[in-house]
Image (cartoon, rainbow, N blue to C red):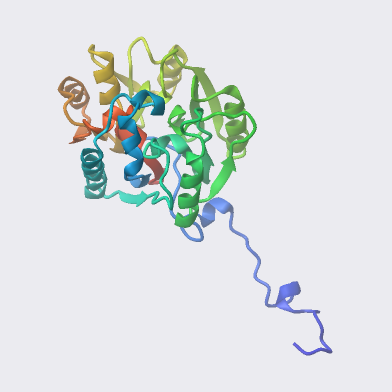
Length: 320
């Protein structure tokens, strides 16, 4: 470019060399952005994010209840079981990413499902409800950004939300459970983000004493869901029936056992990853035609979570 020509007709100012960006944001995911996004709970799982527990678990030995755990957790055994879960994912074709925080995190950092929810166009960051977990979303945001996953929204104001309270019923509908961990302000902000994608948000109240909506509903195929008799909200069951779902009801049994046996992750249609040792529930799943991959998480559950809680779902295969 000569001084006489100046800026006129240069590419930087819209001249012949200019190349305009024409694809939509969603079309750029998997190319400019990392492969990511979901709009179902059952399509083949492609990638997840996890946090391998570390020294932060030692605090559980002083007062488990103070850090929202059920009992002291043995770090060595918990790490070995966590590694077993990650290996089960890899064996089933799922890429595992780790948070790898630069500092020692808070004790519940490993429960990655609570810290964000994926959409077809990126992540909505959670805003955990308790002071014990406040700020965990920062470390997830850092790692998602490093991976190249778009972050669509950070909840703000008085919003409280944990990702395990949101569930895709179909590509046009997300149900959000409201309770101790998620409030109406969060639902309103999530609705603002999703309505631009043509997605409807259906809020539903959860029973008192329920931690997350994940503990009341799991979806294992486009037309098959798992629910808990007398606990899953009436409106949830009706919404599933209206969309053509059949429901597998958990068998009768101790609440704690059923809760842990329902804490599953769908690997592919009618194929799940679940905690080992819950034989009656596993038989119920298998009788419904669900293939079960089992991994020991008997030590990890002492921290008040299991398979589903430990897994932040980043990407599921797109389905037509």
